[in-house]
Amino acid sequence: MPVELVEDASPELEAAFATLIPQLSRSSSPMNIEQLEDFLAQDNIYLFVYRGEKPSEAHDDARNLPAESKRGDAVVKPILGMLTLVTFEIPTGWRAWIEDVVVDEAARGQGAGQQLVEAAIDLAQKKGVKSVDLTSRPSREAANRLYQRAGFTQRETNVYRYNG
Image (tube, rainbow, N blue to C red; front, side, top):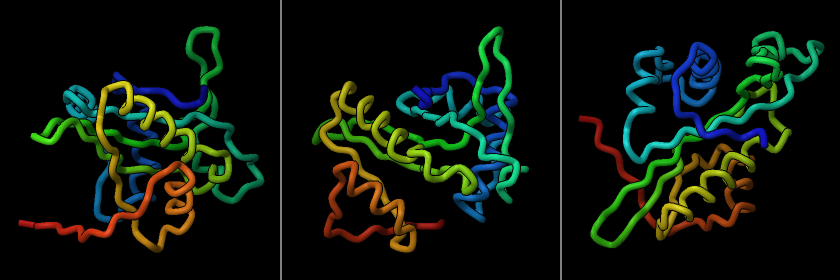
């Protein structure tokens, strides 16, 4: 399966973050290797990555994507997407949030988002969570369609943020 649960930081993961995070948020900086190690060491934080086929070099954006690499005798496809699942217990039970879903612009259309979301939901269910929540800007139309296809329903609620 092209989706993996990442447990260890690596230079490859650091490079993937450097490519993917700017596509997700203009205001966030990618993590360095030490920050990735701290991030992955947290309890109840799960980072999934999608490994896929690099588009042909003729594709305008393909130049910026990493190539396949070798791990022992195995060919390892490049990281082209990621998703973070956060699980936590509150008085009403175990809950989960999906955060920071991003697929490289040059690699969209491979089903990466669907596979990442399905892997996160599967792990959340195995952990016994009662519900999985996520947020998505309305302007991200393809992402919103993906979440609806995956079984998410839009809630009538307000989301607030305090930037203190």
